[in-house]
Length: 278
Ligand code: PAF
Image 1 (cartoon, rainbow, N blue to C red):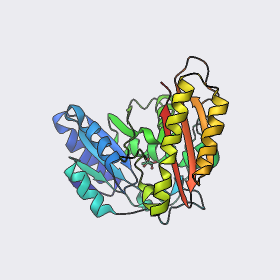
Image 2 (image 1 turned 45 degrees about the vertical axis):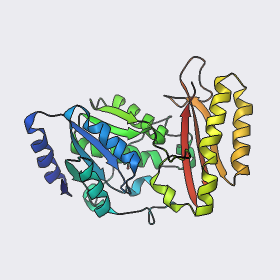
Image 3 (image 1 turned 30 degrees about the horizontal axis):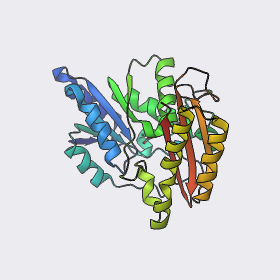
Image 4 (image 1 turned 135 degrees about the vertical axis):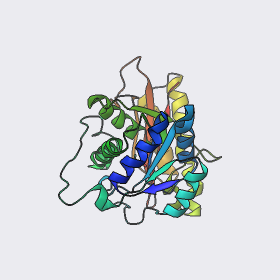
């Protein structure tokens, strides 16, 4: 697996990958890879596609008081994992290569990016949309793969890809979980051993709430109880919300697919999770 760090080298390497006519899949990451990323890799390889993975800790999607400085960076171990997972090319630009002096463009996806995590983390999805559009333009893949764990991000990227006629398939892979149900995340390493035991309350509370809403219990009561359960487990809750799965409108219109999304902090670690309503 080759690693490239400049756009010109990337373009040449992707052209070489395409030489035998194979489609190209992109797996965008911020590194600190885990089994969730490997599931994206496996999906990207389907149908004999060549796979480009990117590792870029994108400063534009972190707020001023967020964890940019301490976000785990371990490119050597990540590169080994990617090579073993069949990655053909690693795109690992520096911040200067991604955002050269004079860089002045921000991509905003109105509405869908302003709610939930967009409200809790102002500017976050502008940073995500800006870097994802750059990555898609740099690699020009046939498909790009995203995890369902970042459900709102997935919908923001899908909206952007449709609105801007990118002609790139935005595909997704179900959330990968620990045995007890905690969603895999690069940020789980921030949890202390004690916090880790409480963290499982998040997927459990969402699971209980989703089952109750599916059987017809009043959503407002169910959401309030899920909130209370999380507070009881030591979380500071940013939101527990029932939304239209695609537009994230709340409350969701009757008859449309629904999803429960939550974000909550345990100590200094912010966890997010989501679940579909059957
Ligand atoms: O989900 C992530 O790891 C990041 O938000 C992404 C999509 C790589 C953009 O920086």
